[in-house]
Picture 1: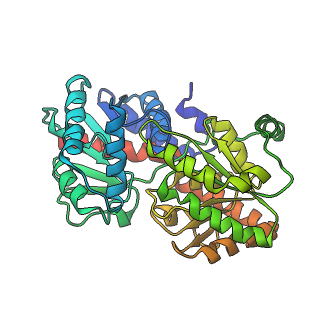
Picture 2: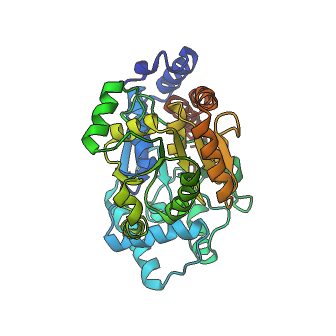
Length: 404
């Protein structure tokens, strides 16, 4: 079982000692995180490690996952898309279901902790159904700067019942919300199977076991099959790159229980990419095994993130940690992670030609790619490791305890 001391040599002693001291001061404080899924996606990955470490330093921390029907998760994915700006509408049946599932879960979730942190829109309405005198925190991992009007008018009254909101970047703050808003960057765990060092022999075994050929440079995107990740657009970019360099595109994906839309996008992409799949110029690789994802991110010549909207994009952080150069769209939280031309390349949302050009540049210039990788790893070490994330939360907990 992972302990805080395991991070000595990765994180500075000063930060680790600060975490230990704050943990001792918060001993006896109870915390609970609530989200929509235990597996799949960055939120679940963060909580899987953060909750363990929080308990290790003496803060009693629980984790609840909201229970819902398949149709409920259809509705909440629709909310996710609408809050990121998609033009959709909701009928009364959908809105009633959202409220009913939250109310039902509130009856048996036992959210009587000193500190309650609710993640994203799915369980947001719980605050309306749990009688409490303690201030709750909403942790918003998505971009809500230009939301769909109907979705925002429905969601905003719930948000205003929270004491504070945590967002992933300064640009995500909402000046029209009269609650405290704080920035906490997401993080990766360098000791998790997805991020820890792998031997060449181990990586060879994964590639052989999955039948992934290594005769060409690999360009890899790790993401759900989601319209916001723009897999269709990435296929178009790859066609441009392919004219300049012989290479292979790998889509590494998983399916989360709270994202029924993923299956539809996956089936669409299989039809669209059929000729490339048959020639193995494009591969679809299921990313349920985090060590396999790790191996692919390390062995890829370039990792890309072609999102048109993005909450933060931890897959970018993961690749940067592995010293793999990244080309990504200049959207969401990605510019917080990449210093353009130094730790990777940022490209405007609609610039497919520029995106392809930067990929080709990295494929051709191995020395530049290697130097970018070295700079990128050091940047992640300073800003985006789970130890820094834990310290941010402990600072928040101290503020909450004072507020009570």
